[in-house]
Length: 209
Image 1 (cartoon, rainbow, N blue to C red):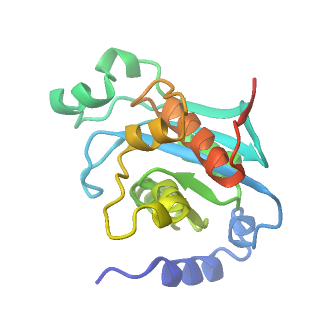
Image 2: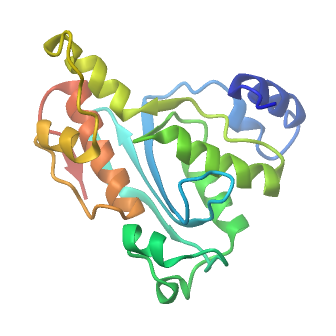
């Protein structure tokens, strides 16, 4: 039986209350959001290994590109030619990648207990949670913000009785947002951040380098 995230969060919070990561389960009181993206070997969570992780922080209207995470992991055993066609990450690109546990620690330190934004963000959270439970004994507890839902809610009144195209490239085009290094973790995370700011504030996002 697959337990809802709320039940996992409750159990993990109780188990971690005196541990190193207890602060992750506290209610977030700030105004920042973290846009996060993974590149993986498979779209099947049970089979996926993480190849790279990218994240940027958003503060109000500002996408803080200088405050970012760009991690390459060690070469997994299940890297295939088919996955390489999508994310263009080859075995040699992972030659200097870091160990999984070190990568997960960096993610937890960077994200903290902030809300996590993404495109199909629940997939990324489920993959991270799979490995976090393996390495640290808990799933990622952060609140999730799905970009396509934010976009749909913002424009649905224009599409009464019709379908809304929620493809990544379509959303970027409709919002007049540049796509930055598509199918790279940091590029997709940054593009999603820019689209989110546009949707939330209705004007051109400010990008801080």
